[in-house]
Image 1 (spheres, rainbow, N blue to C red):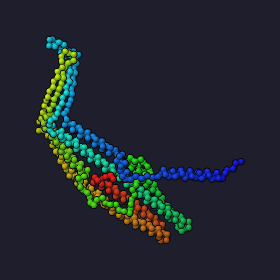
Image 2: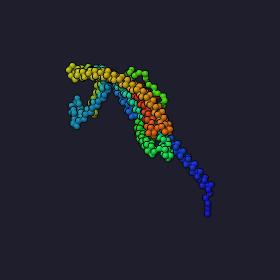
Image 3: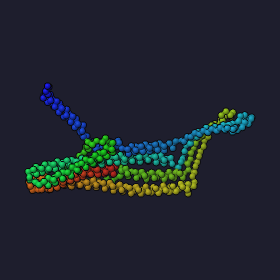
Amino acid sequence: MKYLNPHMFKDNTMKFLLYYITFVGFLSATAQTHTVSLEQSKQAAIAYSYSLKNSELRINSSKTDVAAAKSDYLPAVSGTGIGLYGFKDLVAALPPLLNESINNLYLVGVTGTETLYAGGKIKTGNQLAALQLEVSQIRRKQSLDSVILLTEQKYWNLVNIQEQQKTLSVNETLLNAVLKMQKDMLASGLIARNDLLRVKVQLSELLVNKSKLQNGRRVALLDFSMYTGLTFDSLLVMQDTMDKKAMPVLLALHPDTSLTQNSNYILLNKRITGEALQTRLAKGDNRPSLALGVSASQVGSINSGIGSNFAPAGFLTLSVPISSGLWGRGKQKVAQRKISEAIAKNDFLDGQNQIKVGITRYWYDMKDQLIQISFAKDNLELATENLKVNQDNYKSGLATISDVLDAQASYQQASSIVATAFSDFYFKAAVYNYVTSKVALQ
């Protein structure tokens, strides 16, 4: 009979433990979280955004319009070819002038026309195309600003959720410590069982909120990943945290209502220019047009006994619209265009006022949020001190467990409000940068 060697069993056990520790360490390493900064988030969203890709396509489309408008300055060349074959003779033989009958004819010609004057429509068309390209580029900048703004909103929302999770973790530890103390006191007969139940109830509510917050974070993280194009990872962590000791800085000492660089203001101004150019186009339809051209044609018949004839020619055309500009549709179209110009000017004046009001409102939102942060920090200090006093009094028998739990709830709420106040400020600062067209990448 063979006996097991105890040393062999010990050696195998040690090997198993070493393998187990190594495997657990490997899992821990692979499960490590990784962080993403706000700047990385912006760059990823810009590279992924379909709205920005469409903006680039619109710019390319506007560039083709510019090229097309420039081609109107060049001569227009066209070619013509006609062939005619008759099942019966088109022209019967007529000796001695025409020894053979003719049953086919052909004509080949080329015509080139250069417009000398078209009522100013060619120049105006080029100006309109160039203006549209500028508008497309401005709208691309607006799309870029919008992508950055939404990225910041989603980013700071996740930072706020992370801070709320930290708050719940701290309070969970606090309640667990109170629960342990209550269990010890209950075992010693120093408290009634309902005191222990109160702690358990409050701890259960916290755990429910913790679960809801975790689920909300997953949804927010999925939304963030889908918007920025980053791979979804439940362990992804936003790099920024709320430095609750320092106060954020107001972006400007007063609202910046200088609109020279504001994209919305520029677009309103471009609209006035566009309407004026459209009016010039309408007027051009009522003006004379002058064109110069040359043509060359070859006329003949195949196997008919007659030769072909080459006929070069030059021509000058002048077109003068009369009724359209005096009493017809052309005159009414110009009147409509002038009305559209007046509407654009009124929208410009109203729009710039609205932009200034919006900038001022968002600046005061930032300023008010700083006040909210200050009050929230003060309340957190008071809630922290109140919790400490009630804990000490409870240990000394001068306070009830209800006092401790109320103080803990107030501390938890105050901590949550501080985190939200900070994240709200950063988002409102992003909105202010957006409405003032000062969104920029680092």
